[in-house]
Amino acid sequence: MSSAPTVGILLSRVRVEEKLLLEELDRRSVPTKVIDDRELVLEAERKPDLGVDIVVERCIQHSRALYALNVLNTWGIPTVNTFEVADICGNKLLTTMRLIRDGVPTPRTRLAFTPEAATTAIEELGYPAVLKPLVGSWGRLISKVNDRDAAESILEHKDVLGTYMHSIYYVQEYVPKPGRDIRAFVVGDETIGAIYRSSDHWITNTARGGKAARCPVTPELNDLCVRAARAVGGGVVAIDVLEGPEGPLVNEVNYTMEFRNSIDTTGVNIPGKVVDFVLETARKAKQDQE
Image (tube, rainbow, N blue to C red; front, top):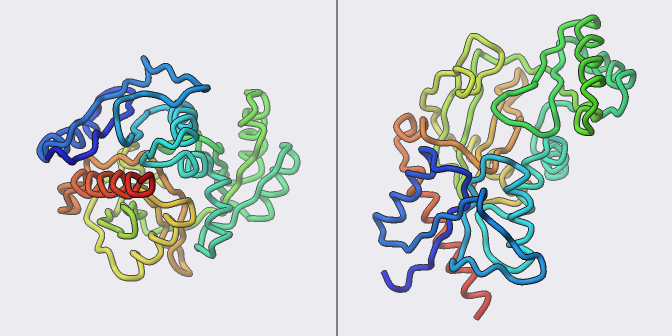
């Protein structure tokens, strides 16, 4: 496959997902290069010579992904996903505002900058409410606030922690769900598969013990998820959907999606779909440059 682009995989370590992507690229005889973010040095003043035609971002740390993508995209190196997508999806408020801008249903959300204002926001939404850090994944540091005593205690802890991100209070309504939520995988303009994540705990992330089962991709779910993906800039993303009493709500959009436990569950060759998209993106980028 001499005409195939050389694909770089920017990663922190080779986890299961990265191994699956590398195996899929190798199966197709696509030239690949592993780029370890722990060893990467990028000159800001000069276009990086990485010896690749496109970069697939698979960093573990959001900050590494964000800044590397910024340099690469500024110099015209195509990436999956782009800096814009990483910047928006890596921040829950930016994601929420894009969803709202594009008319995608999402939980009611409040933003406050002091513990006192955050208390007002929580009580306006009503108990229970959900307090989240702006940046984070795997359901970490998310709090379900059941009453005023809990609100005051959690807000005091955040205030004392003292970091900039802890001084921004992002509060959402608590959406009662049927013991599960939906994780859908969007590649380009298609929802390629979806899973239910079920748990006795109100946090249903599989990283926190949630159990996965196949979720059918209905035309309605596909439309909702593709609209959400487009709102944040498109590419390869995972959409978290809550089945609310009045209809589905998009909760979050993830730009470096994990899919190891969803291939067998969905019956979809997820790494194959991702590689298809990467190669098509590289082809279009080459056409634009000619």
